[in-house]
Length: 376
Image (tube, rainbow, N blue to C red):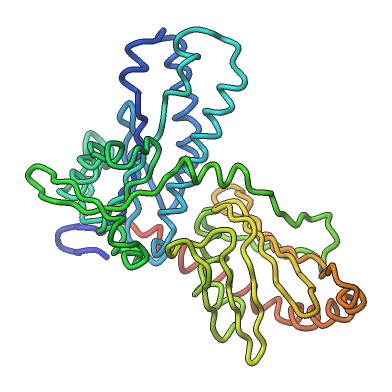
């Protein structure tokens, strides 16, 4: 959404800020502390891909933004923030495990934490010495929200603060209880309401969850489908998982979403996919935005069919790989009926392959052009 005359854009702002940076730099050997910080920030930068862009690096913070588009609805930004924290936590854990150095810097890696702020509002792009930078009151608000009372109120040091402006833009306000909202009174701006998500808990869930993955060499229902898209893995993931878009390329009549976490899709969430009178319940088992998603279709007689959709980044685009494993069941009747059900599923899915692939490509073209749109 752009004001063609003023160049004003609506955008999401995401700031990833390294807590404990100043103390860490001041109290540790520069040679080691710089290497540690370079490695931590170096792990974050490659994760910021279209439709997000980096606006700037400010020593202890990375500032990214995404202009409002069809891709940016619902939980896209929440998934991005959580993934960014998990990348940081994984890199930090790897450094702690692999270092044998006992210097002050290496022994204090665990003191570093990442906090994220997500805000939404208006901005303009201005040319500053040959580089485009965002400006506007809402950009200032996003940075002011870094100085908050979250730790004092909640005890959390690793969190994502999401302003109500961002929640409204994602249509997620109603998923939070009244008691979960906090407010900061920002000088010259006034009170700003927000909610907080615990990132350390999110990392522990992802770290401890059992990986579920249908690979190319598994016993597949039919050969994997490979669909090239000229979009980032994150946008490809959105195409394959967002309920309205999934309904579109599957050719379903409708799709209901159950068991979400305050509107957020994650393991345990159920998609109820309706094709005429037939209901196909699909449970999310493994949710890794920008990488892969695995789900299980729960069929009659205890039969289960596992599906993995994997995103492989290639050049400036993504190969989307869809794999369906043959059905299986712990029940005797299900085992006896598996062969017949597999044949029925092939007869239902394979004739629709060209149609589904064409729709996925069309969505890639549509969402790719939307996210790549330049401001006026």
